[in-house]
Image (cartoon, rainbow, N blue to C red; front, side, top):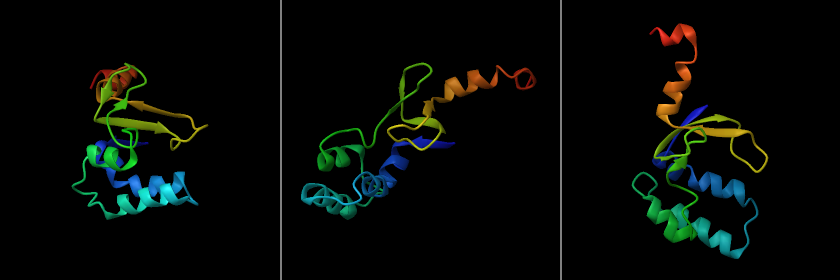
Length: 107
């Protein structure tokens, strides 16, 4: 379980790219080199979009309970992968879930 933010996605983009393309061909290698040149502490989601060509690597994530998109979500389950069991929940939905536990509902 971990908190996913736009910044955390940006900070992990090089590692995730290497995991997605462990033996990159020329175009993927060129993209990797561009990502490695970024200052990931200040880079924006638009910077990644310009380099990669789409916005799927950093940006708001969908809460699988309320279907909204949020800059911060709680990732529960396995690390995302093609066959992983992973879900993302927004803060409001996590708070609603906590109220389902009788002892916590009194707090």
